[in-house]
Figure 1: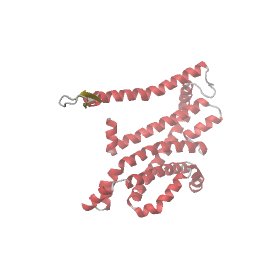
Figure 2 (figure 1 turned 120 degrees about the vertical axis):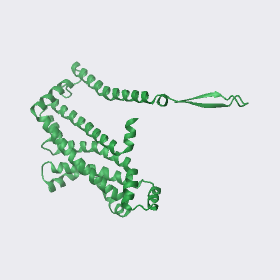
Figure 3 (figure 1 turned 135 degrees about the vertical axis):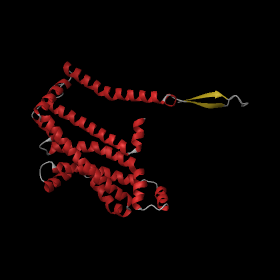
Amino acid sequence: MSLLASPRDTDADPDVQIVRRVPGSAELHPRRHSRRRRTIFLILAWGTPIALFLIWELTARSGAIDVRFFPAPSTIWTSGVRAIGSGVLLDAIVATVQKLVIGYLIGVAIGVLLGLILGMSWIVRAALENMLVALYTLPKLALFPVFLLIFGFGDAPQIVLVAVSVFFVVVLSTTTAVGSVEQGYRDAASVLGANRLQLMRHVVVPAALPGIATAVRLAAGIGMLVVVGIEMVSGSNGLGYLIYQRSQVFDPGTMYAAVICAGLIGVAFTGLVTLALRFIVPQYRTRARR
């Protein structure tokens, strides 16, 4: 869209100009504009990492960087294929994904439920909100020894830590989203005879869904960060454990392969969560069509 100024024909004053709005390509050719934007997006999304890996490969082969610490991507690929063939990398991926999915689902379910209760009831919010904020600021790794005492060694305390980390992000964001719903909507529904359950189902939840969905999407990446980090600190399996183990025996090829796999899993998991939200939240479907 552009704006053009032209002299006004009907007025006597020749210095007065009118502004004429010219439609842009997005309005004149919406489908062509949308295809062009998607093409540019795909080129940038795939072209940027490919270009970075090519630069990395060239600098490694030319000796500009120390391959003992930064092996070439081709070397990392070979080490990753070897680790998959031996089952080491595949077992680590399965273990990490299991802990991530279970902890994430538990944290999201409890976080959304409690967030709705806090947002709808000022009494519950007054009793619990300050305590939740205080616990949210506490480093989650500080709680891990407590979980070890309660749940023992193994995957259970790691899953609980992921669930707790996801829970605090979701519950606080859900509480804020529910509390931000306009009071006029609530009053209108009450005047029409809606009870508390109908008010939540037909007014509060639909209005708060975009904020809740954003928190759920962000929590997917946080869950991946937590599970890999805790596996490096205290784990016997998973990608975090494999990364730490291979760094100790100075196997940078397999270590970087595990790091790349962790990043790809994080991107894939966040993408799956976003895809699921498009079927639930109308605003996400609108955003996807742009």
